[in-house]
Image (tube, rainbow, N blue to C red):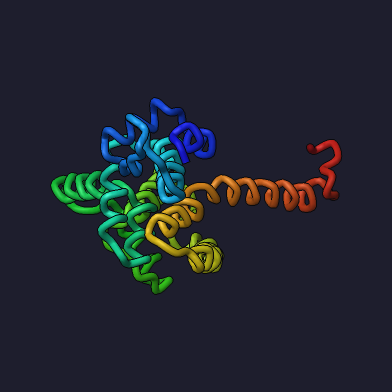
Length: 221
């Protein structure tokens, strides 16, 4: 396809595509006999859609996306590809861990997050960003004297464990590194708002049934 069709199918403007080409995020097309023209294939389209998602949805910088794409190209392991896409800024997390160590070790929340992980039997990297995210939440709950602690989160952890099995199954059937990366973005980024919306809908239903005596909510709604 010509660059105009690539732009139309991807939803990315031609000037932006040319910028990605110049910066090395998108590989050059196959040169044609016509001057200053090139053909682009489905791999270009898939890679461009992945770039658009990482930049537009994940809000990553172009340099971060370039680093991720380079790592994806070098990796052949599905687990590593999934980790690269879902935990895209390891340097930032390592910097935060170093700051915590310099300040006297991990927070109580992070320690409790690790206890939860051990209780669940999860195999995760010690530097996974989600550990510190969970730790920050647990610290905040403790600051407001909440009775919600890491043990209170175990039922939620068990439910998310089942959800994660569905997530990983979505990765099956993909062929090629870019398609695997695209599936990882789909599962880890694009489905998260849908899962949150489903949770909100279910919460409204249960609240209506429990507190207002009916699914329609009545006056309480």
